[in-house]
Amino acid sequence: MTETSVPKTSVPKLDTAGSSANDPGLAQDWGERYSHNLLGVFGSPQMCLVEGHGCHLTDAAGNSYLDLLAGIAVNALGYSHPAWVEAVSRQAGTLAHVSNFFTTPGQLALAEKLLSIAQAPEGSAAFFCNSGTEANEAALKIVKAHRKGGRVIALEHAFHGRTLGALALTYKEAYRAPFAPLGAEVTFVPAEDAAALEGELSKGDVAGVFVEAVQGEAGVIPLSADYLREVRRLTSEHDALLVFDEVQCGMGRTGQWFAHQAAGIQPDVMTLAKALGGGFPMGATVTFGPQISAILTPGQHGTTFGGNPLACAAALAVISTIESDHLLDNVTAIGQRLIDGITGCHPRVLEVRGRGLLLGVQLDADIAGEVVTAARSAGFIINAANPSTIRLAPPFILTEAEADSFIDALPGLLDAVTATTSEKEN
Ligand SMILES: Cc1ncc(COP(=O)(O)O)c(C=O)c1O
Image (cartoon, rainbow, N blue to C red; front, top):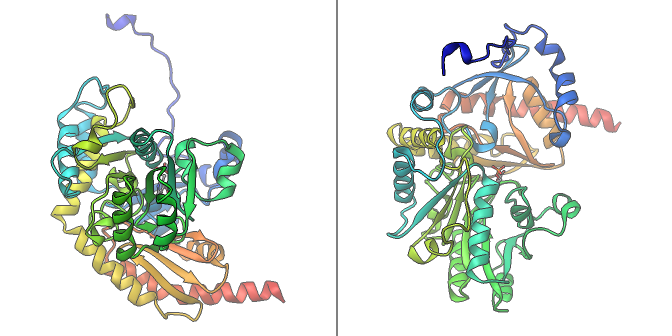
């Protein structure tokens, strides 16, 4: 093709960086543009963000925030981390995407690395996809293929995603009801109740059990090592597959590579996403051992984008930086600092739950939404995991000084919320 055969169109330059310096109207009109053009499934966004460095974000009006949410447990290395930027940029300039008819060096290296940090035995395998819900869809297919027509067990208050299979595993009725029938027959049992699980398993028709070692969306509820070991024993005894959903609590967030490792057990299947790509959309389903890895046969599952070179480069940069910068140690130390600093800091804080940098601050009433708003005005991004629980899931690079700034601010935020809510009541 000659150069002249390419049609030259005049394309208006889009302000994709969205910086308010390039688009002075953005700070005023983003809300209206959003509601006019984007599907309303997320409600109204809290702000329009334009830039991030380290643990800090800047919005369209030029305000900056300390981010203690990290895109909901995603940005393990924070924003614009040089190692991540370098890896993704280099890969973008080398080979961005190929079909899964082919493999690439990064895909091979990432699978090897993931299996190694998961301490997966010989014969284990990784399947790469683009999100947590997709990772769980693949796991669900493995479970269903393991025992055809079998039921699946999930835990009360679990969240496993929004696609129809993962949604079937998700507890909240409001999410499920409009879309029934869903992609699997699921029975929910209470967490920490091994007898309830045993009661279901002993009926002999259960194909698999899905568990989050720390239930994130439920309000950051860590499950005990004893219970998790019992779940492992019972699923093995009844030939049901044990799937650990580590989409939120995995990839180092609890201070270990994977949260189930604290219980000293091995899953049959593990699902990952969020921090895996450090901000690049990526998920993975890991099968442990040759028998589980052989359940899905060629043609039974697939994806166009999953495991493409860009995603694998991002994930390799995340894992190697966590290793080289000893970030698992930082996660443990800063997590403990937050627990120590927040516990008892104000009468309205009842408890701080969780492990590493996945923490739930239990409040004495349904004021988490108000606290999130007050925190935002004071320059902190946090989230309400449920009406009475604040969730903290910051980047793994959070410093002591950054953690302390939130610890110092929280009592004042709780006082301010208390004053406003009691004013409204009177
Ligand atoms: C434990 C867990 N599983 C699955 C998902 C779904 O992941 P995604 O939103 O990437 O589809 C989430 C998302 O919050 C999650 O926390």
